[in-house]
Image (cartoon, rainbow, N blue to C red; front, side, top):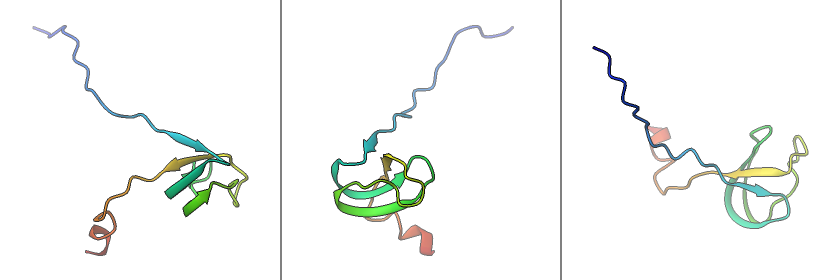
Length: 69
């Protein structure tokens, strides 16, 4: 017998994008080419592709510690 009930996994796939010219603080990746920057000022146009949208990188004090192990 086949289960016909619908089950949906709830995921948090929302990604906030920041436009060039926004005043920000943190690490960001260009949404077009993936170029990464760490910044404490106004987001520029991407120096690699000229993109105008940036995605903030989730920050954790331990995010880089595991990569060295």
